[in-house]
Amino acid sequence: MPENQASLQCRGRLATLFRYDPADPADYPTRVLLQGHFEQWTEQPSSFWLQMPQDLYYTSTDPQYVVIVAALRVGQLSAHAAILRRFYSILLHRLRTNRPGSDDARTIAQSIYNFLHPATYQPNVKDLEDLTTSVKSLVQAGSRYVNIAKKLGMGSLFLLGEVIGRSMSVSALR
Image (cartoon, rainbow, N blue to C red):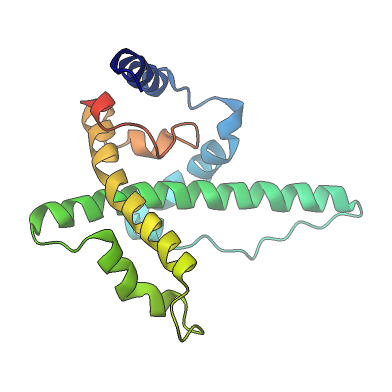
């Protein structure tokens, strides 16, 4: 990719970050999640790290309503998971920064493969490669989120919603 095009692409990503509006209808699940749990997380910060309960079922005579409510609840769960992932990525980044001899993504993937795939006796090459890519993505995401937090404050990581992709360039944020 030519250098000018790469520079324009980075500036565009950075502009997207600063233009982000949490009131965007696309981030409805994030907004509802934060509104519904703000007081609980403020009073008991450790509850943020726990899975949200699934015991609230919507009953209706119209199955469409039931499906829509279920889908919206899943959206809130995925919004919570995205926020958790950001903070886990920062924690991982800090751990790796303080441990200069940290293992590479492939070594970590090989080490945790049997735990994540207990029924598999022989590692599946495709699964191992996909796991390695996921570990690498988590490791790389940490510095990206640290830079976003430096520019916009740590609380901004709660509000990013799904609009800001995990592929945002770290260099664009410096």
